[in-house]
Image (tube, rainbow, N blue to C red; front, top):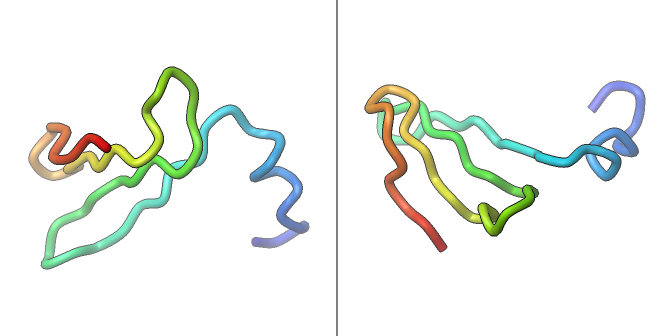
Length: 51
């Protein structure tokens, strides 16, 4: 991350966007309200996994 990683720790949410099996997914790495670990299908427009 350009400029250091301190912004990741000062944010209220961190979402990792990945390409998995030709599908774009977003994984909540850090968040409020118990959403850590959620996997969201960007292409399908739905939550596909809740931890």
